[in-house]
Each structure stands twice: as C-alpha cells, then as structure tokens.
Amino acid sequence: MRRLLSSPLLWTLLSSVVVLVGVTAWLLTDRATSRGDALKTGALAGGAIAALYGLWLNDRRRRTEEDRHEIERSRISDERFAKSIELLGNEADQVRIGAMHSLAGLARTRPEYRQTVLDVLCAYLRRPFEHPSFDRDRTWEPADEAAAERERLVRRTAERLIRDILPHAGTTGPTLSLNLSDARLDKLGLLGRRVGWFGADRCEVLSYLDLTDAQLSGKFLLENATIRGRFEVTRARFERKVALDGLVVEAPVDLSVATFEEAPSLEGTKFPPGSVLPAAEG
Image (cartoon, rainbow, N blue to C red; front, top):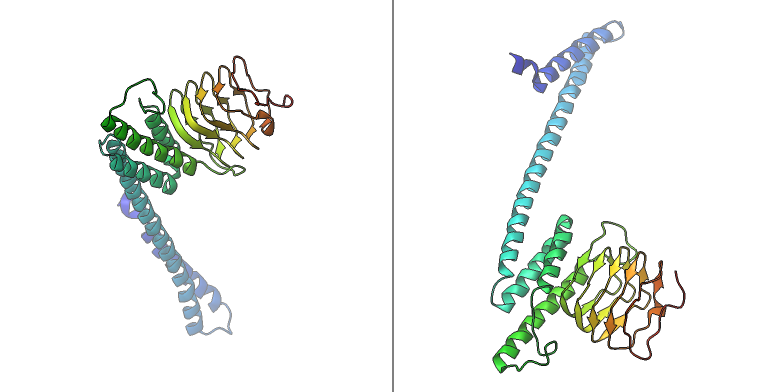
C-alpha cells in the first residue's frame, strides 16, 4: 500500500482527474459554455498533466540510459588502459609503440586520463636505457646496438605523444605536469604547449629540449641535468620558480629570449661560450 501511494503514476492519474473535474466544473459556471465544450476542455487539461508525466518519464529513461552508457564507457576505458599498460612491457618494439598510441588515444577521448597517461609515458622514459649515443665508452655489439636503436625510436614516440597530449599555450583548463627526473631523453619538444609543474632533475638530454613558445605555469626544475644538444627557450614564459642549479648545456643557450616572472636560480650552471643569461630579473 505504501509503495502504491508513493507511485508517481498514481499521483499523476489523480492530478489528471482533479484537473479534469475542476476545469469542467469551473467552465460550467459560465452559462455560455455548453457541457460538451466544458468536458472537452477539462479532458484536454487533464490530458496535459498526463503528457507532462510522459515527458518526465521519457527524460528519466534517457538519463538512466546515458548513465548506463557512461558506466559501460568507463569500464571499457579502464580495460583499455590496463591492457595498454600490460603491453608496454612487451619485448616487441612495435607492440610498445602501439600501446603508447592507445594510451594517447584514451587521453584524447577521456580527459580524466590525461595526467595518468602522461605519468605513464614519463615513467617509461625513466626506465634504464643504454644507447651508443649516451654510453660512448662501452663497446657495442651490432645486435645490441640495433636493439638500442629500436628502443630509441620507441622512446621518441613517447616524447612526441607527451607533446601531443599537453594543451596549447594560452588556453584554459586543467594544468598537466611532467615528472622526467632521472630520465634519458632524446628529442623533447614542447613547442607552444602549456605545462604545469615540470621536474627533470638529473635528466640527460641527447639532441634537444625545445621550449619555444611554451607556457610553464608551474615550477620548472632542471637541476644537475645535462643537455648535450640544444636548449631552446625562445619566447618561453616561466611563470613560477625556475631552478637550473648544476645544469650543464654543451651547446650555446640564450636565456634572454625567454620571460621569467622570477629570477632563475643559476648556481653551478655550466654554459659554453656564446651563451646569454637573462637580461634582467623578472
């Protein structure tokens, strides 16, 4: 009985009857209105109540169906993420590349995964990696050198996808961070991208770290790192603390072409001849 009394359908029917009787009785007080017209108008008014209930019911079903689809999408996304993580440990380089592209696709379609995917790609770049370009003192067998080169291509894919996932400079929205401390990087270009916290302490960069037109909205930490190639900061904007203590750059770097909201910390940095420091603090 209690369940029946709480039913929206019951109260809708009762409301329709009340409106039907009420409107009909009210119209009958006017002598110019016939009984037939009064009853027809009352029926239309009562039917409108039932129609509103039908619209509400359809909207409720639609929202329920959307919630069901969202739950299903989340389940599929979770399974896709877990499978991609598993494939990152595969011995075949093409499988690892495919897993990275799968993760990047997930980050594009499911924004809540973007920071997690970036963390995974950064973690991959922090894995131990040896290559003739980095480890020049070692004697390399042809097979080992070929395997190292294939791994280098996989890591270049990770570096490129990191750039693709990051939002463009000047846009609004969630701020994404990068943790590349202790990583060995080859070609990391964040041209025109917006980055939150950036940590790359003790990292080693072989070809370049390119921050041209980048917006660094969080702390930028590049301490005790080595950049064997270029360090480009043309029109880069550093909006928070910048720590470059102990940074070694083997190619000339021009820091005057960047904008620093706070004076960068440069204690113990080693730049080659031809390098230019920031023109002025702030």
